[in-house]
Image (tube, rainbow over all chains, first blue to last red; front, side, top):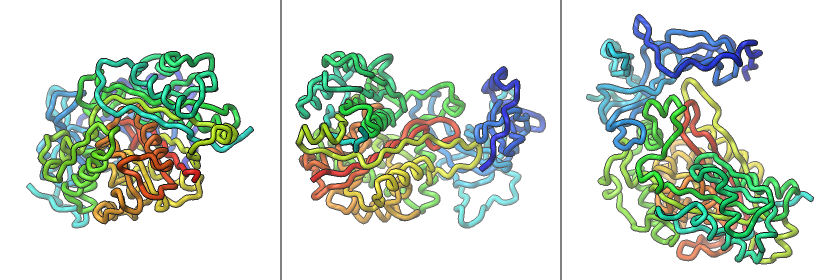
Length: 145
Length: 382
């Protein structure tokens, strides 16, 4: 079990970062990394959600990952429908709930995906065309479509 | 004086849509019913615990007042879908430690106030801002289940078929029409791969329990159900990978409850579990330890969890058929367990039911499987 480090002295004066995703160049999401336990998280935070330590530092998160699961949402109290979201496990171990594009009903799980963005700041993940392994390990299923 | 807690009376409204009624209109009749059943007066109640999420300030006091009950501590509990079960968790603890001899538990909520659609989640949450709604969360779990377990959408649909078949025998269920696998899969899409009949309906409800000490139980006579275990967990936050098919909040709560009671998961005659969406029942078969990992579909197909089977799961119809009025749900599950263990589950009685487990989770927030999970174990007293 990771021992929580002492909270930074000024931690109570800090508000969490406003909850907006920050896109960096080269294209990446801005997240936080905990100096105590090493866990990265998204979006950026002031305190580590896993060990409570303070003084997290901003980092550029991995812009590639694997699609853990996805759903096309047809009924929602949150957004106009339909929209497709999914959990992406980034290559640096961070999990991100993201909008997805080019992910249809037949899209297999665990496929490589990559971060993409538009000029207006919208961002999403899509199947990774540059991935040399469009086919993924047999145990994880078959890529179709 | 410390005491084992007992449930000596239980009542609920048939789950449904009661758009014209207030929280008092919903809650007061079931409170009146349990007091009458136990032959207790309002002044006999020493504490009230009320679970609800959308009833506004002091819902518990408003309901208590309506039946002439006041002066005593009234605690309102918000814990999403676990609110009602958490109210029981607190009530039984107060009896167990000797603080009170007679406590009243009420669970109540009215979702018809929102019209319809998905449960309103807290907009402070990052994932909710991104478009997370409860059906989407379970839909992602469902797709992962199909992928890892090699299951089909028809396997998911079988859960709804079983729930509706049980619900058809329960006059307190919101949905009482049996459905076929084909009808489940042909119902409209909510969040792929889940269709409408794989999602619990939105409804209104209220349920109540009287939880008393052994001393009072003996004085009252009548049939009682002993609370053998009561466990409440919150989710452990993770910023990285989390296996959606092995929700640690349920695994941990259930294991602890079984240890407290000294009863193995496969010894229960009746289980009411949190089947808010079809996939949940299959995931929870494994998480509760009813079968090994990868065996959930086989367990469902075997018929062991249907009425007439070895461990009947959701004889009430569960959330999928009985309905899911958030704060009332955890209490309504215990009402079903009480009826089963006292031989009063007319039309769906499990022969010889002596041991029951209830399991309810709660909420969708970033970083955890669920925000809350409450598990209870009950034993009938002959």
